[in-house]
Amino acid sequence: MGSFSKVVLLGNLTRDSVTGSLPSGAAVCEFSLAVNRRWKDAEGQKRDEVLFMDCAAYGKPGQTMGQYLKKGHPVLVEGHLKLDRWQDDQGKARSKVRTVVERFQFIGRGEPAPSAQNQPGKPAVRRKRSTAGNAPTADLIPQVIPV
Figure (cartoon, rainbow, N blue to C red):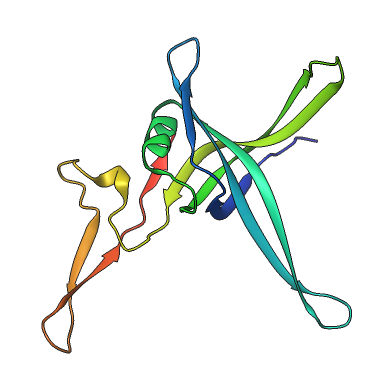
């Protein structure tokens, strides 16, 4: 039987993203997302759980994400799981599961999607005319950035 690893997360950054580069020169952006889950327990009480997921984006997507994502910003990421293993300073085996970002989407905060700024032919904001009054309103067009 084959196997499959696919992750879709929607959450907010818990801290500013950290951008670096690999020995090959490719950019890498590391960040952590807080993802909430809400459910009702056996007694019917609403319960909340927060999961903190470490993520990494490589290449151009990593560069773009590192440039624009800051603590508190919402983002949707799609990718696969990766298990990192190492030994700490005391020689103890350690491991961590992270999400390797394959695609992402900036989630609007009332401003244009950063990935589309300064790119001719790719408008980040679609303007609509309100039917009540003539005040324009801006709706964000989600920007999906494939890897």
